Every structure is written in C-alpha cells, then in structure tokens.
Length: 105
Image (cartoon, rainbow, N blue to C red; front, side, top):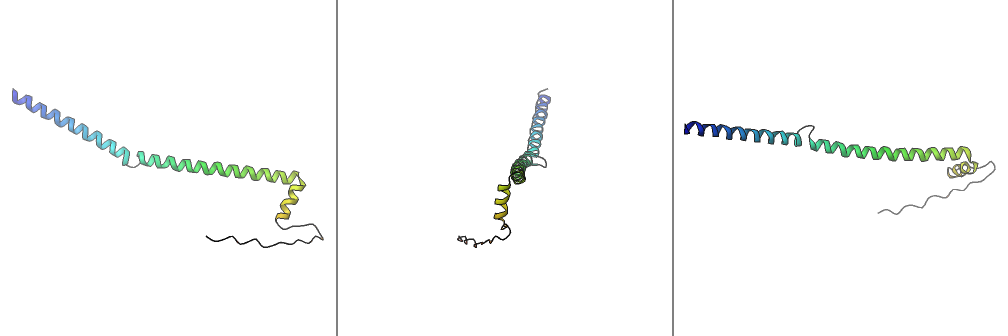
C-alpha cells in the first residue's frame, strides 16, 4: 500500500509541474510571440502617432480653408497675399531684396 501512495504523489507532482510549465509557456508566448503584448503595445503607439499626425493635418487644412475664405471675402487680404507673392498693380514698380542668408551652424 505505501508503494502505491508514493507512486500517486509522483504522478500528482508531475501533473502540477506540467501544468506550471504549460501556463508559463502560454504566458511567454502571449507576451513575446506574434500578436503578443509587445506587438500590441507597438501598434498602439503607432496608432497614437498616426492619430496625432491626422489631427495636425486636419488643423492645417482648416487653417488653409479659413485663409482661402478670407481671401474670397476680403480684398485687402487678397492684395496682401498677392504682394507677398511678388504681384503688383499695373504701372507699379516692385523692388524685391534678396533674403539675408541664414547663419550655418
């Protein structure tokens, strides 16, 4: 009798060890494997960066739309923009000076 009891305890120990190893392998695979936690975190960071870029582009787009609407409705704004681009009225002499060179680092 004592022999069979001892044998059962080895089976239980082996069963527990196998369960622990299986759980450990599953956890490691879910963390480091394909589609695991690390890749999920990397994808989330990339998604945040892309959302920030989209938000920035949307703000720039709305600013440009506002400036276009201003040019359509306000002749002074349109004239200011045209003068920045080097245009002038007929019989008007425009002098453009070269930009100062930026100091190199």
